[in-house]
Image (cartoon, rainbow, N blue to C red; front, side, top):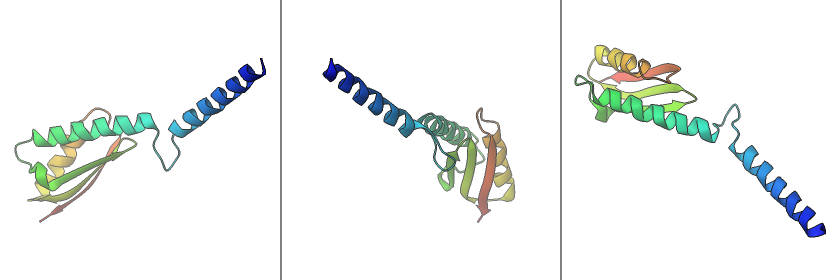
Length: 103
């Protein structure tokens, strides 16, 4: 009976550590947020790739807690605006920080 109590205590302690390890903080994403952001990043990259006027090779996309950051270089300010518009249309995007530079 004593060993059962010890085993239960260890199991509960390990479970709590696992749960706390997956929780997000103000400076760190939870596991679920990380997966959601990865999905959003992929969808934004795909949407930009499918836009024929944009050169996807020169546009970097990162997502943190639903906020998409676009960086890199484009040929014109119209391309920068278009990339921002395309990113905003993707489901799950909370906002877009458009840091694209015209080369």
